[in-house]
Image (cartoon, rainbow, N blue to C red):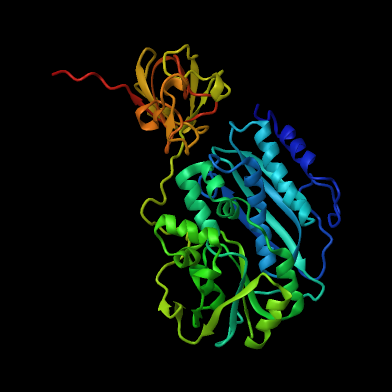
Length: 457
């Protein structure tokens, strides 16, 4: 059952995050968090939005909570800082139940405990999709030193801590195969679903004084390295395929792509990318055994990999490659006595109950002309569907041989859009009461259309 009130939701959060507050001078719940800080404050924030940064079809609730916090902690690591606290603002749609939110919060709390990070407060709001907005706070280590981007000089050494390209390979596998990819590509998928914020390594680099600059790789090496270099300098990269993770190499072979291209495009690796004077590189490699050299800074602008100019780019939220930027905006929700998939009929007209279609009140003028007794077609987004399923038993009957989902009405399909023909029984404002509808409570409604009339010859 979904949480029933804001107080209920806040109590659920309290169950996962202890009341201990090593830096907080006030308990959670006031208008602001008051933290006892001196010597500088590091602050960063990141949005984590459903169907932009994650999909419920292959992210577990625990994965969502872990990653939402991890990407923020990675920013603190990239400054060489120590993470202290964070705030959490949640966008809460009506359909996830209590178990979902408990899982999400448990995944987040587990990572917070590992790094000794305190939940300082936040906010809640109803929304059409799940969204998390986290602001993480930190401070420099004992030396007071922070590692900013830049500081590069021609001839400086470039190094990384962490794997490049694994998370992108995991994303491609999960988008293609859904949760089944986790069995075949466990390391790639884990890199995408549960990234590791490298806080100890970042802090060690800052305290050592060996690095000139540092950042985390969130948008891919090809896009992030120029941000570290600045507008004037370039880089000559020296990366051999054998230096990449074996699972990345194997996955690239399946895709028919170069593993080096996957490593360059990357995205959401959350490795640390640093620059140091040539004479300090050996000391960094001794200090951090996971670090490895990847090239040198050049006076010549642009990037070159193994002597060849780099033409690929990393991730950009506002670029528009083919197929990107597609998003369905629900215009309403189903209000039904069907609470889960197990209760829903397998096909229309199988004792499906009446249901209300609660549309956005701003659409009230668009309903002009609809009337009780009229047949309409509903387009819904079957949000509980498993997008990795390609073959099913028709009507859920195991005695019927499996068929491809595109030849059945199964809700499990690559893009789970439902088409329902129903009759309007009553209209109240922007809400429509309709006859038998097999969609579960909370199902997003994408469109309402008059039923097509039979063609006459």
